Length: 193
Image (cartoon, rainbow, N blue to C red):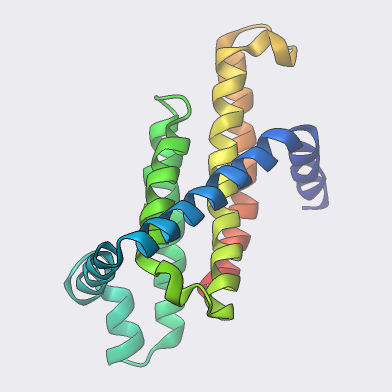
């Protein structure tokens, strides 16, 4: 485990610029969503109602049911964690990026702008919401950053002293897989908030 954490630190240290730019990109997209919500308050309200509908009868209804109806906080935490990890990260960001390079940036941008619109300027003043966003977004940022590593190792393997695209793809895929340890950690922390 110690060796894995050293490898994770090395991955981020050796690629700190793309990691930093990915962070700026995602937090900037969130800020853009908040500004859009500020400029168009009805859009903020519509998105908020859309999420409320998802909580009542959509894909997030299980989380809502366990939290509000059954008062089973533990199960709500587990389902929130599972949703963030599997649906929002693996299925929408990482999996498509295995076939379409940099896909994670597109879907990540769209998801985060929508989240910024949904949260809006009024709720961003809540310190617990800010803390949740900061921690949870790190999971998304690392996932998107991982898709960058995969794509760049595949597209330009020689830049990274890798002799073929096939080998570059495998190296990038292993890096992305290792980063999931950090992603899991951030989502575990954020699901408990």
